[in-house]
Length: 91
Image 1 (cartoon, rainbow, N blue to C red):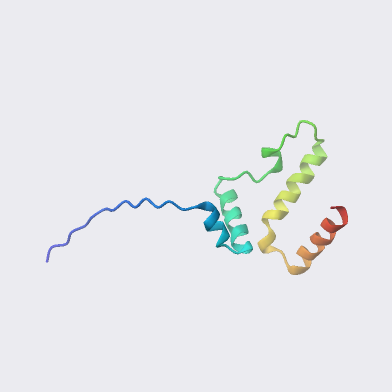
Image 2 (cartoon, rainbow, N blue to C red; image 1 turned 60 degrees about the horizontal axis):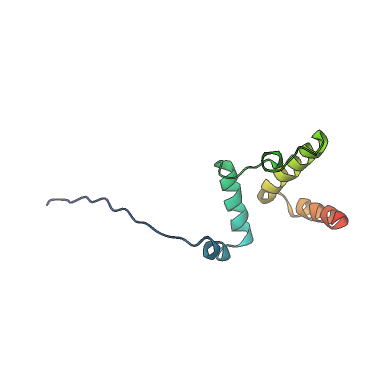
């Protein structure tokens, strides 16, 4: 029996808003993490902010906070609650 192999290219247009609306918050965070790890999104605040008027300590602080944001999925409930309390205090 003869086999026939074919290559098929499929062009799918995905609406980003519809896709994100169908995602849970945890899935969106996983997507962001994957985009950062693959180099599609900058992970360091100093990479995408105008840091010309910031001190070195401010830049370092922002970078640390951005790093913590990427570690959300690895944090315990207690750690995220602690960070929420700090956020609520200073917002």
